[in-house]
Image (cartoon, rainbow, N blue to C red; front, side, top):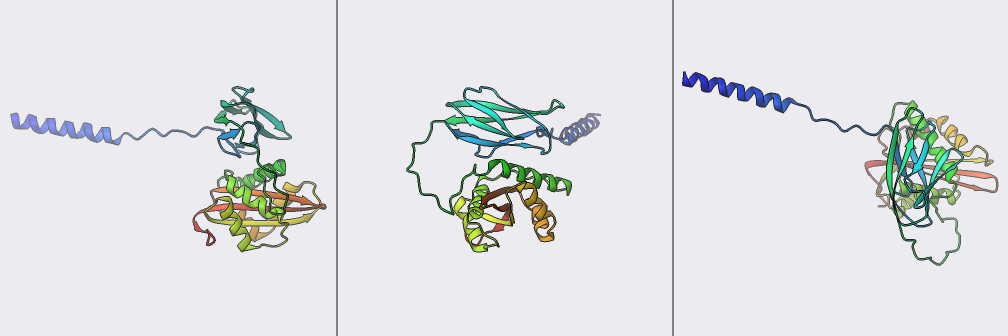
Length: 257
């Protein structure tokens, strides 16, 4: 009898243990709205940074928990964070359905003023043609979503690399220079790139993305499922628009790195 009780107790213990182990872990759901900043989560006093809000294609309201530290401004259909004083704030974006997402922005002291370097064709600025570049990213991500691949977050290094190349006003691909630009900007992996050049400065973002959609090779690069981040550059000079798209491909090699 004692032996039978021991067997029953052992069986019950094993059943309870198996049941306990079978309980699945509770997944943490991603917020319905993603909020990030072109320049990352830390800004200096006086800096401005475009806000990346996804999913793209929706109307959002954006607020700051302390506008005296970081104010938010709407520029056309885009939102920009303006660092005014040291401190940390929550930037919150919400849509008409009541969904929301947020990020923390921290503002540090302004950097000492540097001597201004002379302008050159290689100069790159994260905020050059910001509205056009934000619209281009929105259109590219919408195209990716329409074709069943994930939207891409902005990568600051690729933004700078793409802008550096567009500033050189290339009219065809210069692979070594593009690869070196990515390395110089701090992106260590391989990447895909698209280039388009056209006369006129009107509707630049839409024209650039339409050109890539209508070119099979460029379209495949734009919707490549291997990519995990994006940067774009736009330069307008003498009524001509030069546009670059860099998409990062992790686990690949840039031989110039």
